[in-house]
Image (cartoon, rainbow, N blue to C red; front, side, top):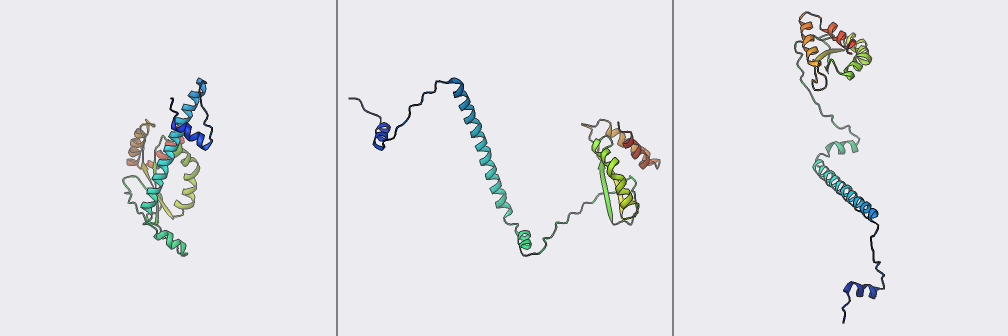
Length: 178
């Protein structure tokens, strides 16, 4: 007497037809395995993202004062952040009595710093520095890993500063950056 498997008896009891799959198409099998692996990876990433977001919400739930104040129509207090930037040895543009100081951290070889010099610096000078509303300070921020001549240019500008010609040299470097 041959015993039948319990799953087949159960399937007959419920009158369910269980298909007998035979995967003979080898390329399709590979595709299904790859699709399954990618789907599992994406699901794992999504799960981790949800867990991370839930943790961050729990951590920030104690900081609801700003939300409650905003809901009551009050303006939340802006966090005040004061950064003390020493004037250093480089000269300032503008009046010392100006209440606002703009500090530019720049690299003489950076193409984005040149774009600022070409397009924006003149407008800031005309509107704010020349009118005495703002004083302007320059700080060196050379990035030698991508700008090999930036550090040398910064050192040379320090020499120009000792001769009272920093801003002239600064402008000359940006005008002839290439």
